Image (cartoon, rainbow, N blue to C red; front, side, top):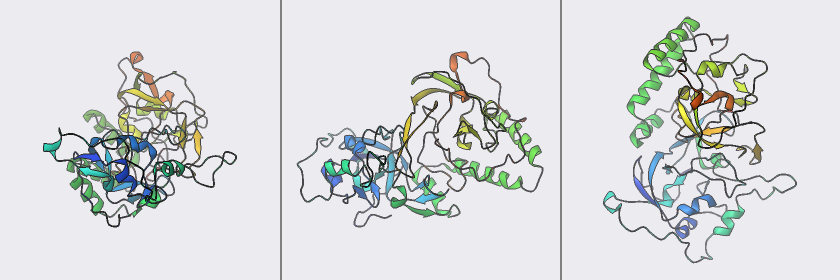
Length: 373
């Protein structure tokens, strides 16, 4: 949804911006604490008056609420490293990338980068505002929710459909915007285009032989193996490593992980997604253990009954996500401990060509995002 009366400033990746003061931002919000359907959340107040670089332009995002699709957003960016800490939303641990309307930011010229910043303390209360700090806290919960029925939270993730509109995957203008904004390089665009062409050829030629040839080629060049393969188990195994934030781990090979998955590509209810395959074999640090997140469909808090982790620098890059390519939302995928091994225990792990992991029906052109159960 476009912002009425708010001129865009056309930010690009790398631009320096300053978050406007609390009073300036509150003055843009309606009585639901939102601008153009996009909520400004209490967790964002601490950044008022501070300066950051634009990490991604959020001209689009992915629909994780209803159907698999991209959604068009107007005049929104993501800022470097700014993720929601869940402090005003029941301690949700999803660490979502925050959405920033351009109306909440001011561009800073590079020659002013070292100049004095604006104050960060809140200004005097303005009785004419439709939303103040107290109201901002109140609207983090749906009014009909209660302790008895279960609190239903409101946040940028739950209200994303209100702030966006459907974007057909075939609308080529979105990919031009991706390149023009700096989100995506031409090389990345071509790489994904060639992969999609390869996928189309699988429908008319020898599927197994092509996948084996593709994986051998990728293994030779150090690339990602074919990501749309399925597990084969009826009952999936469990492993406990007791990993904690800061621990160094190596992601197992794709072949090793497939050996832990059901025919729906899940391990004890948690899906292993195609976007996680590029990280197979890499060494990472555990960023956090995740025990609870907000269900974006209902706003209710979900709890994870088993181990679930996120890893530093491991995000969904939306290179293999059908109908939502190059989504800049950078969601952290969730990992089972059985998909990882302690880095100190790693000794010359083999490459992962996945040649023996093929199962009938392994090609899944409609793979959904990672289930959060």
